[in-house]
Image (cartoon, rainbow, N blue to C red; front, side):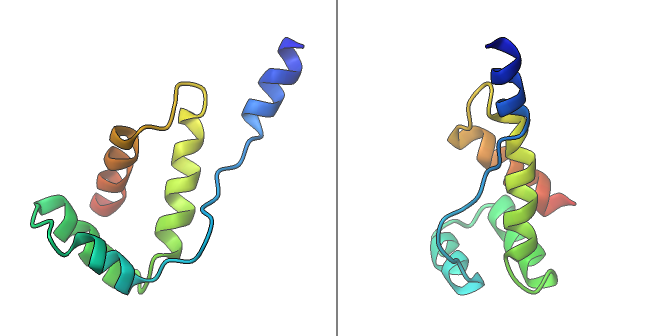
Length: 84
């Protein structure tokens, strides 16, 4: 059983349901005047959309499946993405 659990955790995939466009991201960030939100928006404009963000974040969050994907973990990953 232990090996099966390890295998399943190692091969789990995180995906985001639904579509999100850069305009929606702007709406979510419109009242957030932090450096992090401005940096993220600049990165998304540079990347010409959110596709790379979603793929990268899903991949990075995979390592947190065992310990939990929390709002703080996701916020940290968004900051790391925007700084890359």
